[in-house]
Amino acid sequence: MSDVLSLPSGAMRRPRLCVLANGAPVAGAQHAELVANNHYAADRFRVSVALGADPAMGADFWSAADALTLDVQIGFLPDGAPEGAAAWISLVQGDVDLLSVDPIGGTVRLDGRDRTALLIEARTQETFSNRTSSEIATILAGRHGLTAAVAATTTPVGRYYEIEHDRITLDAFSRATTEWDLLVWLAEREQFDVWVAGSTLYFQPASDAVSTMVLEPGALIDLSMERALTLARDIEVTVKSWNSRQQNAFTQTARSGSGGAPASNTPASYVYVRPNLTPDQALKIAQGRLTELSRHERVILASMPGELTLTPRTQIALTGTGTAFDQTYFIDRIERRLSVRGGFTQRVRARNVSLGSTATPPGDLVLSTVPNP
Image (cartoon, rainbow, N blue to C red; front, side, top):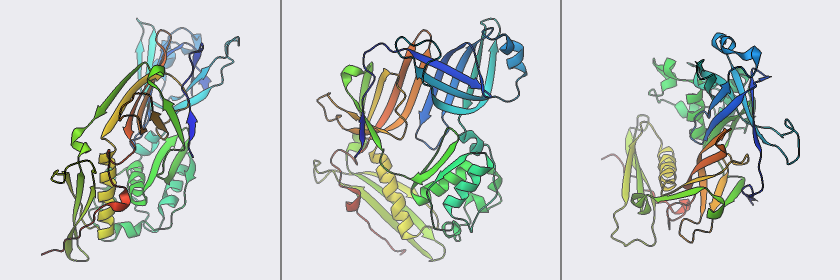
């Protein structure tokens, strides 16, 4: 059962920002923007620092820096506690991609990505055909000094390749493949999730969130609720494939049913063409795409006081609106901002959990197989 978390109360809050550059505290950190996402992509940060706050970190120091690794931390200072007594929580760690010095305005801006960037920037031509997905994830994590939180898998990835010569890791264009592309491809085949948090690479089964935050309109700064009416209808996803080994073409279809819609309702149809799949693989892709599309039917955008609990892999339960939007949502993106003038706020984008408003469960998906004529 999920834990239920609550938003910060209206009591006085004293948020504080701490930035470490190559392990050393940076004086004069004024502003931070942190973006965490659930899209197989790197989290991002932007930090502004006042020049002159630390004589050792003037414009000459920043302009001569060749490599910078930031650890951006936020904490709350308890009432009555002296400065420096905040319990810091690290929200993002990674290398700076862009450094901008403004000597007139007296600021330095540091933009970068979390440690996912280490894998995104690493090219690979390796196929690891005799390795399992979990072994590959562990190997790649070790190459970049990351701790591996990896769930064991048993299938050698060579079985996924089979005779699929179109796979980028096996052809002449493999130099364009990155280690991150490979991990994402493997995660999709294993129905896993893959992400980096801090200095840890996670490669684990995709599952429901382990905690849920309850949102009530009265605790929010603003709230926008959107519904895609196209996706509110029945959705039909078709995957077409030609299997070179079996010398056969086939079509697999997955469909969500809308109990409240008229029988004559024409479903929203989506078609994907993928080479060299087995019927089971095509069905899994169809079911996966159906789930992804259905989860975009209802979207909420909520601004609220900043807190340090939510992650892109928790859920939020909206209550108190008195509408059909009162349900549970997957977090899509979290944007946190902390500044001297603006305080600490965050904006959350989330998608509905259920398959449509009255969709049938995944076990009732319709499958059809059409042989090559």
